[in-house]
Amino acid sequence: MSGMIALDWGTTSLRAYWLEAGSIRESRAHPWGVRQLPEGGFNGALADITAGWPRLPRLACGMVGSRQGWREVPYLDLPATMTQLGRSLHSVRADDGLDVHIVCGLRNPRDPDVMRGEETQLMGALARWPLLAAQSTWILPGTHSKWVSVRDGAVTDFCTLMTGELFALLQQHSILAVNVPGVEADPDAFARGVIAARDSGAAGALSRLFCARALMLDNALAPTGVPHYLSGLLIGEELRSALATRRFCHKTPIQLIGDAALCARYRSAAAHFDLELAEPVIDAAAYGLWQIACHAQWVDAGSSDVFMGTPAC
Amino acid sequence: MSGMIALDWGTTSLRAYWLEAGSIRESRAHPWGVRQLPEGGFNGALADITAGWPRLPRLACGMVGSRQGWREVPYLDLPATMTQLGRSLHSVRADDGLDVHIVCGLRNPRDPDVMRGEETQLMGALARWPLLAAQSTWILPGTHSKWVSVRDGAVTDFCTLMTGELFALLQQHSILAVNVPGVEADPDAFARGVIAARDSGAAGALSRLFCARALMLDNALAPTGVPHYLSGLLIGEELRSALATRRFCHKTPIQLIGDAALCARYRSAAAHFDLELAEPVIDAAAYGLWQIACHAQWVDAGSSDVFMGTPAC
Image 1 (cartoon, each protein chain N blue to C red):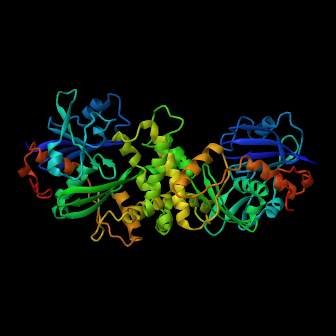
Image 2 (cartoon, one colour):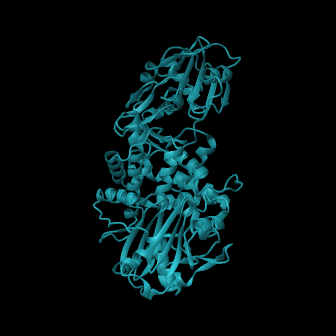
Image 3 (cartoon, rainbow over the protein chains, first blue to last red):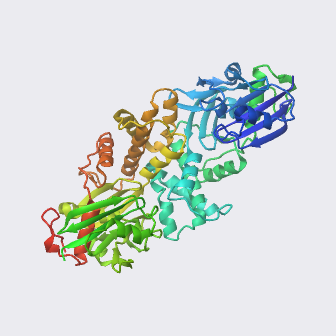
């Protein structure tokens, strides 16, 4: 078998990939995260998003495996390797008679912290850049941004910063929400936010949040600039805070995984911290699901194309 | 004239006081903040809350003087004294033919930051404890908590921490919102949050926010404890952050103004920082409005009762 269906099923979105020989043959996306399923629930969403595709092994990652998901699957404790992830799949039988297999999340018992989905993206990225398995630091920006340490092929540490969720809450519901037509980008307002966070030092950027309002009242920040200032402040705070923990090595470029536009904001913010972030890896979840399927020996590792490399198993 | 109507008119609530000789003769409260006015708007709210009271001079403070309020009145720049506040009143004519006078807010040009209403509470508290006018630090907990420095009778510095608003946002709209019947108090969960914030050091407590979810998934924190943990984490972060700025003297007890239950939480949190907070001053806005009216010579300062003391003017 050289094909499979990969499902990246998060809180707010569902992405499906039809993979052949480790490459994306076709992909589809809907806003059908586990919190906003269409009529028909999990089965309906799956049938719709894979309509017309062949009946192939299906592997999913993300919040679909959470308590609010299709089936709750346990977390694997750190340190965790790809081989362990491949051996720890759980399954749920769909209405069409075929199983959906679900990848475990990871748990950091030291801190404590959890992730679901990011472990799979990381495996996809590591398969693409195998030299980074020895030692690397990763940022996966998003609703709940993850900072991750990889050593000797295993995830050894990670922490979560709720940057994206805080931004959305402040934007939609707080006194800092501005009801003005947005501008596509405002690099100056963004940079001011980043610098305010960086220079907040040990006090932290929460102490600079209300400044957005004061600056606006002073006409020192245009209302259209407020969301960009806030974005800069919160991304800057993520960088400031994660660096302050001294948990994550950043001697070499830190690797990024995620949406290209969001990753571009992180790279721009990082420049104010003299920090180098690499170009982001895109569609990492699809490649990670392929790798895990290889380790589970559902798909033929030898069939992976050159781009994906040959899995180490 | 020895009587007046004092209006403490904020974003979410309106409190009216009928004052005689500097004492509260009667008080009323409604959730008619400037963001949630009843039918009839500002005039309707005023007529309703003062129904049956005599026609007396009326003085208001708070968000009623903001851009979203009844009339936008300017900010006074720091340093600012009671005398300056008394000289800077603005007025709006109500439908009943009498004016409502509105106290200016304060602006910190150095930082920048703004307040509306807290300056009046502070004046009320300073009138009660005149020895504190020489040098003192104040916390006014709330939606937008203020930390304030007073020197030689003037407000010389302040900053805003959005502690209360962040707590409400996270409680109502975030992944940390728990849909379980609350328990009245959970001192252990609260203390765990405070200690997590204190021990977050320079990284700050935003890096510990997601832990609330991880702890709950681990069954190490009961769902009913999550709101209390979050409250402790955010109040702890306010204390950690404000102390880290080194802007506010805390050699002597820090003074509190505000709601008794909320102030009790701050005192309990402060104990984990070896920080002493004084007993809170209650109804400070009413007394502050009385003091400002004395300085504006609308009411007879000599008529103030012993509790209120004689204004320094």
